Amino acid sequence: MSVEGTYLEKIIAAKRAELEGGRRAQNRPRAQLEAELASMPPTRDFESALRQGPGPRAIAEFKRASPSEGKIREPADPVAIASAYAEAGAAAISCLTDRHFEGSLEDLQAVRRACELPVLRKDFLLRKEQLLESRLAGADAVLLICAALEPPHLRDMIKEAHALGLHVLCEAHTENEVERALAAGARIIGVNNRDLHSFEVDFERAIALRQAVPRRFTYVAESGIKRRDEVQRLREAGVDAILVGTHLMRAEDPGVALSDLLAMP
Image (cartoon, rainbow, N blue to C red):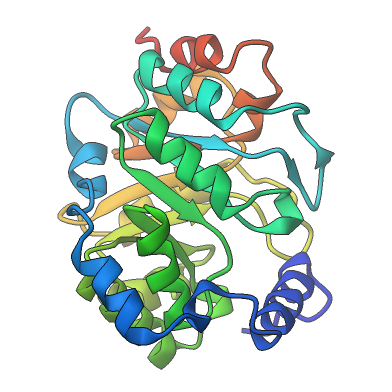
């Protein structure tokens, strides 16, 4: 898929330049990394967390900004917000670590220390060494974007993530991408309501594509979810989990906003 002229293209180009610049943790000796990995506890079960209890379960997101909306929340304390999300009933926490969202691996590490919930690293992951970096930083799951990875590479990335003990939320935007995600071995499929070309949100996208994913897979609706009636519609459509970020981060109290969003009618 060509993403020329999109936000994604610009971010991916910047990410590739960053990787080529060698500013990654994997510049340390491989033996040191392997020893560090061997000493780590198992990852928390992200997939099971999304399927336990009445759905849809919530992946509550921590982020400070976005390329399309600019500043979202300043200051933003990852420890305080992750703790509030956990108390409000989140199933997992998503943490933006990309600099275009003013995120960092330090934010992810702070979130990991703040609560017992599984933590998803949300970034633009293009290489296997980023998966190892994610695991070493404390991520339990990673986001892989179909539009950013060619099919053979997507398959290899999913396989490597699973080998490291990481769960994978594989993000799609079209029925073709859903099919690619399933064929590549993804077990958790996320459909993003945000268009990669315009960054506009179509709430109906995740509902329309629900039938393309067999029920034995975990299905996540992402982006643009703001109201309780929208959550109810997703519940009726059989969505297992929702990923909500901007709405919560803009709220005066993100924890209260999450509780209100998840309240049963």
